[in-house]
Length: 56
Image (cartoon, rainbow, N blue to C red; front, top):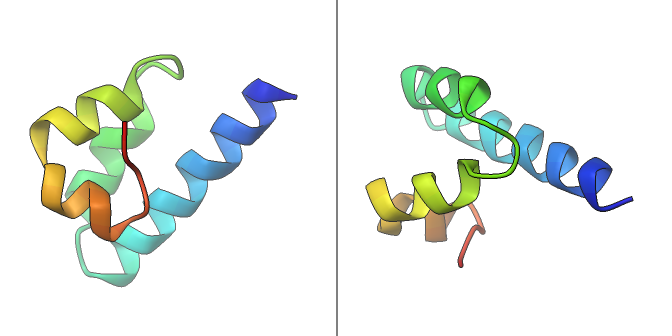
């Protein structure tokens, strides 16, 4: 169940980024490992991560 939630959240973040016109960042997130993408996203773009609802 946790893996499904993470994938769902990852898809939602990618969709949000695409809506913002940030397709390159969405593609970057798509290729990140499932177990590390949130931490990598937050550490690279903390403000953008907050706007997408991701916080760690």
